[in-house]
Amino acid sequence: MIRNYFILIYCFSFSQSLLGQNWIQKANYPQHAAYCAGFAIDGYGYIGLGFNPFSNDTFYKYDTLQNNWTYVTTFPGSAREMTVSFSINGKGYVCTGSAGTKTKEFWEYDPITNTWIQKADFGGGKRDNAVCTVINGKAYVGTGIDSGNFKKDFWEYDPLTDIWTPKSDFPGGERWCAVAFELNGKGYFGMGTDSSYNYYNDFWQYDPNNDSWIQVANFGGLARMRSCSFTLNNEAYVGTGRGTLQTLDDFWKYNDTTNSWTLIGTLGGILRQYGVAFTIGNYGYVGTGADIGAPYLNDFWQFDPYNISSNMEGQAENEYDLFPNPCRDKFMLHFPINLTNIDVMIYNSLGKRELFIENISGNEIAIHCNNLSEGIYSLVIIKDCSIKYRDKFIIQ
Image 1 (cartoon, one colour):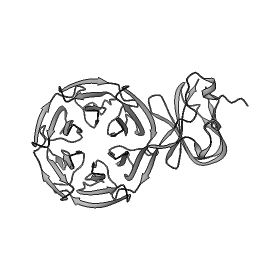
Image 2 (cartoon, one colour):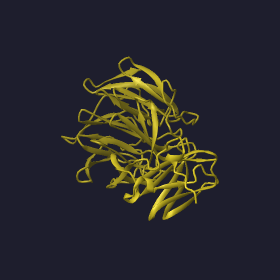
Image 3 (cartoon, one colour):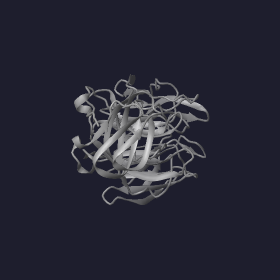
Image 4 (cartoon, one colour):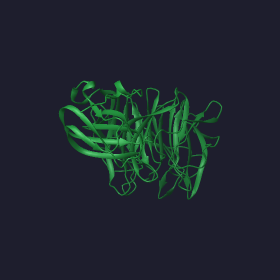
């Protein structure tokens, strides 16, 4: 049997054992819920509100050192979901959302006194499914929907003056269920859907210094809505959500220096939309949400960019083999030892998962791909909720 080693034979130079970046499951959030609010303050995570299938009004605090959740407060306004939430200078904020009807209320949480104070109503009026990020100590909130009216406006909030100021409209047009993040003093907004349920994968950079927008590289995966994001080490991570035909579990990394997206794998193999994400220290955290027609979720995950597994079960990289490559209707995975309970996922070049095989074992495993079209695909091998191998292969 001839085995084609990818690095030695093909000029594409795809790594046989691209270093995996691990998702680690943490203590479950105390409630099953979607559409939650979430933010991080002084090394603690806070999640609350949401829907399951009734609106919630409670908040819980996550302790990274103890890996546990503690009830901290009941939200003083009416129970709600589909809010935007963020933190600035040691305070947490919850804005807009749906509380039976859509609202423009804006609330500030102080973790030291464990109290809420109602602040100036959002300047753009009632809505839910808006989007926000924080740039240089100010919040930028916009888009969303109010009773069928889709929005494209954007507003700046200054916590020092408690004033909302209108800014340039989002140039991508009316949008709801979009996603946002901040990198190096710039805001990035994109994806979501419009009034005709067209799904988008565009991204736009906002510069608060001159109130201007420019379009940047489109998101690397499928167009989608209801995704979540966090930032680490001057890079942004965006993933999960709802595509045109399916709920998604892939995560992508954006680098603003190269203006490029890189697929990093999946969130524990779990499909979700309406999740919550934030950063604490050197780690990203993602949890809660739901899939269409599935129960509300309460799982909670930590992303560790430094927890790198170079190989499966401690074997050297050159002992892993994928052959033949290119292939036609099937390929083989060969390992020097018998592996148990691994999951194999295959993604197309747009990041859509085409194949998912669970709980397989062996040291030589046949993967049938005769139903896939010709092209370049990504292979992800998962064991114990961690990505152990990522690779590229070609179907001819």
